[in-house]
Image 1 (cartoon, helix red, strand yellow):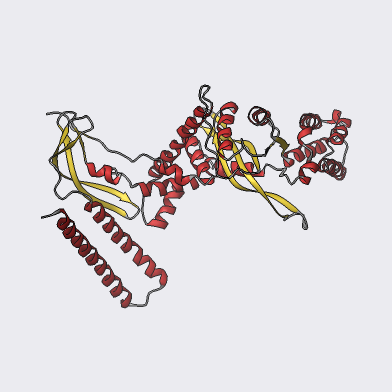
Image 2 (cartoon, rainbow, N blue to C red):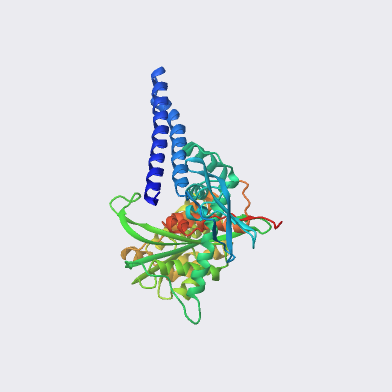
Length: 456
């Protein structure tokens, strides 16, 4: 019998089996719906598990079809010797379409005593585990919601039941791919002999914004540690929701970099992300921050020609804190004083703001803090000029990033993380929110299982 005739017979057998299964399902649901009137919701609920079972049957049949009908007596072993055919060994896998069972040829090497099934490598599957497709879905859910909630969402969407531990393992596996990739990119960029910057984007933006902030995460044995976050984005002008008749600058095309590292290491990683977005070639780079020293140190070291802007909203907080510290003033006069300073600041008259605060500097610590803050940052507070040039003056993009990247998943009530776990989840979420999820999961190595048999 020729190979073509073998494949033809197997194809006909597979088609006949599938048609038989589908026909049986069709008859079953048709008789069921004719028994009495059914709602659409009831029909959906009845059909979904049947279709899932049918889909699993198809998946198993297609996988089984790739197993050789007549397996060779020996195959090459990883140790360099030959492994001998033993038998067909079943493998059970949980997939997006339920549990499937495949029987495949199993081989054992008499030299190294390792046994394996070559079909596992072809299908990139691991017996007794979950499929790559299901693992990606679990990792995606694990980056979006807490693990126990991910279990509930998964069951509602796919009818599959898994434990939160499996969701965590899938999420960690994806997240743990990112840190080595980031480290490799940093090492390559800072190689003293042959530095290699990331590949530039197809289109270099005219103007690119960089914004940085940090939020605290609770770690086992370490306590609260700062997870630094950086956002890279461009902007567009839209009609203002607050001031009718005017336009406001909004962020778009955001990407993020996160790390528990110190400021220097974070700065190197964030530079790589900024360079990947074209910051080294953009005509105009704008760095927005809340005034923290490490942010301006990053700017001075990595982008010395970038324009530096203190976030407007952080600056206004110093004015309100100073107003509340004024002694002997009523609430109305505090408000009037603060609004006068805000107007001056909005118009870019930082010198007057400093002078008015200095006049009352003996009345409270918060007033002295305001004087210091505005004095140190006055060249970063020319807000009237920035608005005239169409620049964004708020760091809301990165602050929002801290909330939805870190806070929403790592700072729920009672959460305490290992350092590795926090890094994995945060970095996976950063890749997802940066539009790089598919490329990240594509880099996963396939799961493998090794069978070891002791020598007789």
